[in-house]
Image (tube, rainbow, N blue to C red; front, side, top):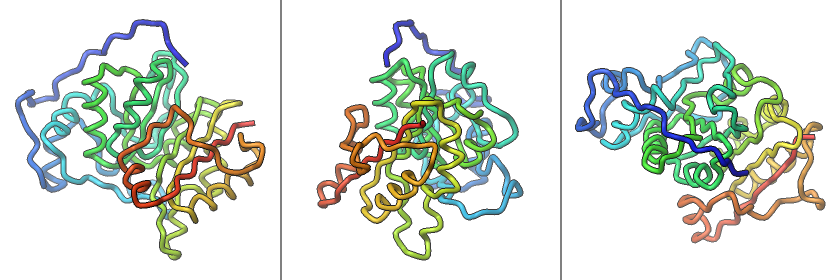
Length: 272
């Protein structure tokens, strides 16, 4: 989908007490990082009291480079949001009326930025818990003049269930989620019925639910779970995996896996 409107980059406020020349030291601890990014992504935006359940992720603050830290300080107040579960997002206002695709887990954001550049007529709400990746994607968006990306920090399940209205999304993408390969950890995998059912309900009719993985047992589970959801139908007439669509770039992570002989499976299901 393309957009003929001319978009201009929104004003980017300077974070309080920060200058463009400031750099974020590597290896800072959580308390120090909170001071470095006073208006940036929160460590636990929904609060540990919000609910008790097994999560498919671990918060990853990680080492933040100088460029990523600068991007977080300057751009988060404009293009970032914390998943706190306390309000419903107005996606029309957030993306200036563009149809919105939710991407869960974007790593360092290179593929997300590429998809946003190739399709400026679609907004991408990119959710992750990896602080360096959040900063990197914000920096990429600014450098490339992309105005159709917003970065969400926190638990995607809370985002879907409590902050997005039914039928609001034009698509959902889950590319290379953690496969949690050990059997005792399978319960942590994201693609489970308790996730897929509410996620499908947030899609508008005809919207794509697109997953990709290079872990064969997880691909089999994904296919089983998605096929069992009555609100979704496989775009493949044979009920199997789909070839990689042209709009999904090959990531560095994927390339490394392919070099090792991994097989990548794409699953494209449509909301009935």
